[in-house]
Image 1 (cartoon, rainbow, N blue to C red):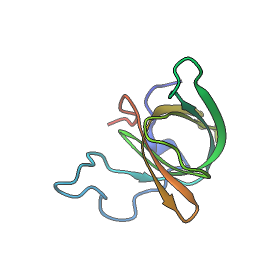
Image 2: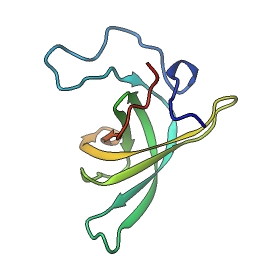
Image 3: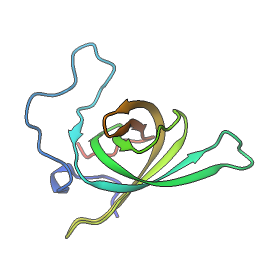
Image 4: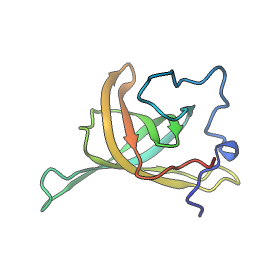
Length: 125
């Protein structure tokens, strides 16, 4: 499986419907591609390094960018926790796993909007 995700090949990613969501002087450096669908995630709490706790849950996919992913979770997730999102294969598309660190978690009408930062770029140029 390739380390690079080709957005043009993923049916979960919606084509952009308007201008970029990155504004001049904004901290965000990458365009976000809207996504739809669900995935499974494992959230790891490393507060106690001797006994990390893991929790599995179903998440709603929100968006994907070169630097991470946005998801909707049923419960809040503390920034700093590690998370792995498992995207299942869809037809001819390969599935993939995305692992990163939670950088934000805000209340959302459907649960909690969680931002994940990945250690390396995930989309092809």
